[in-house]
Image (cartoon, rainbow, N blue to C red):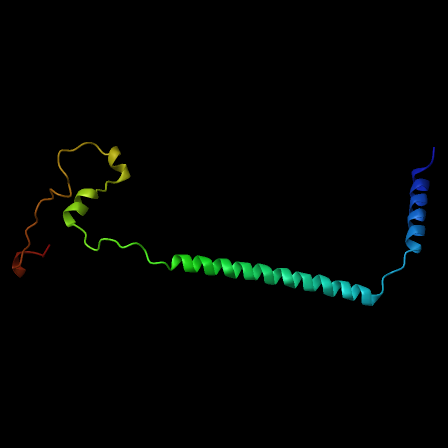
Length: 119
């Protein structure tokens, strides 16, 4: 049985022999490859920017269309009959026979300075 250190040493030696025969690329070749990669990246960026600008222009054009003609007159009676609002917590309140907002007592206002403050 072979020692793991010996196995590792043999593998590193064989890998080093394979790498030793490999020639390093010249600087000019690496620079040319980097320029090609950069040019391709810029083309992709320009294409995506153009597509985004086109999509934004289409959205703006579609939103500029005039809406359908609506009736400019609103019938007050129809509006009052069709709108009613109640608070969601009204169900929690006990049932009463009067509407407190409609049946508030009338407070008489004093207009003479000697008879009290104006309410």
